[in-house]
Image 1: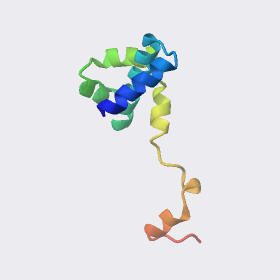
Image 2: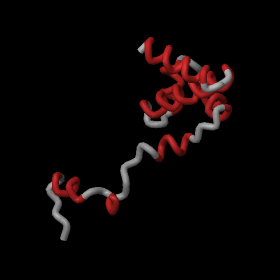
Image 3: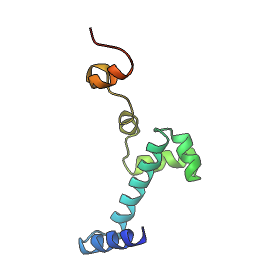
Image 4: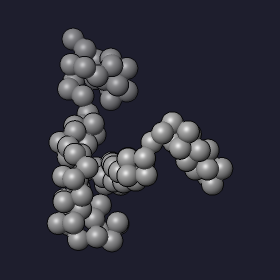
Length: 95
């Protein structure tokens, strides 16, 4: 992992990305990963990150993360959009 990070930092530096931009992008992606792991639950994510729930909420606002987008990515598609194979496994056959 250290080699991957070294490579990424080198690419960012060569690409002209500023320190501020790099830190912001890292924070945003890190928070998104934790939020996804907790299915958008900010209380659980804050506990894992060892920050207060209000602090996490403020960071989400600062980084322009849309909590609804996180939750929407976790929902199952409507039945009409699910593949037929899924219905067959459940023992249901379309009529």
